[in-house]
Image (cartoon, rainbow, N blue to C red; front, side, top):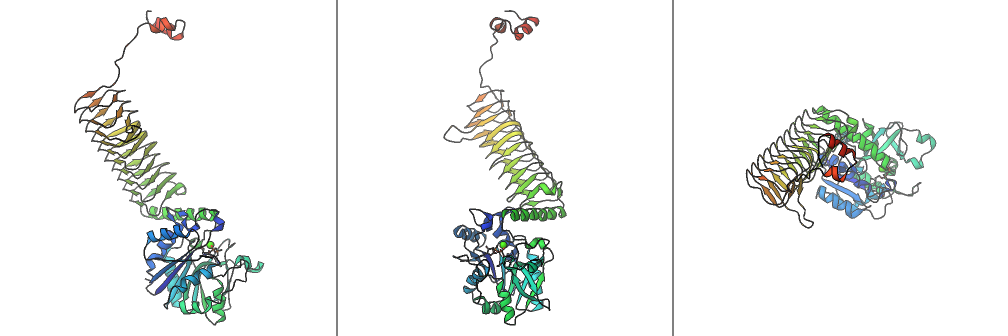
Length: 474
Ligand code: UD1
Ligand code: CA
């Protein structure tokens, strides 16, 4: 491990002007985590002695967000955003200690720990004053270009905006990831000037300054240029999000998950999926979702912070903060809201919405039903178009349903109400009193047939003709 890393500086103060956003660039999300969180997650295993993030844009929110990630991370504020060099200097001023510093940007979330580790190893082996992680890009537009000297070391980094047309032809770019000997960096950083196209203090200019001091700078080329892509605008955000999606899906497939269409399957970085799960197209597994072995998810399903048991199926559905037990069946077209717990082998079918409710083992809610604030026992059946009337306009109330209950179709269960074990309700009932175990609850008007009504009141209608033909009398 990188035990020798004295300090890591993450530059994240920039306004992210090109994002055209109200929130800081580093707070935009990629696979369910903020950009800065993703960068910090790659840096964390390096176990540097000190970690400083330079913040500025949307400072209070960014500082609060970082403190939730880890209390060990120090933040330094850059009030005036006058360049990456100025930002790095602020972090250096707050630190005294020798050794190696890793500096990287808070807007390159695809970098992996492995690449950073390999970069450090290469830097240590070469033993120079500084190393720059570079990449060969198919389209280097917008990035700083790496200018090498006769020995193949770096002489200078020139920003796109300051580059001549021949320098723009160079396809080796600065990824914005650097390792410096702290002493060598401190000697030059205060000498930075802002005489350039953007009138900023560029961190990249320390390279030529170190060079002038007789220092040597290695260029270490990254094997996978996609890792080094930076996010400056929403188009680059989408590009990085798609690369991250492919990377996450690839890993799950290697771990034994079948993904039918990886281009339309969006899995957040913290999601856990067991082997032999099958994921159908247009499915999103978000937040801290966990999926057990052999479950079948999708198509067109979104699960946010859900737990899905083994061999469960969830088809064309949307669920948030819900537990779907082993072998349970959900969907198509089911909406499970916060606090839904479906026990083993239970079912929530088409056009069923459930919130804050437990559905016992083997119980079924097959069609067109709203269940709110309820506890349903085992192997009960809720008939089509039942509504758990949980809200009286001011407060929410509970409904309790025992084991082996049969709720007739179109029952209104007006909470608070309890239906005992083995009880039935008649179809079309409004149930606002408890039904004891084994009873049939009937809560509807008795049916009356008014004979001959159509023949009298709708004399010449087609219905009257049909009724007469069937032998009906006035
Ligand atoms: C920078 C590099 C460029 C490199 C590219 C890689 C410089 C001058 N240029 O360009 O050579 O190819 O990254 O992605 O460094 N920041 C601050 N304070 C500031 C300005 C920026 O903290 O005053 C932070 C930003 O929040 C960002 C990072 O530094 O995370 C890089 O800044 P950005 O403006 O995105 O630089 P690039 O134009 O991408
Ligand atoms: Ca950038």
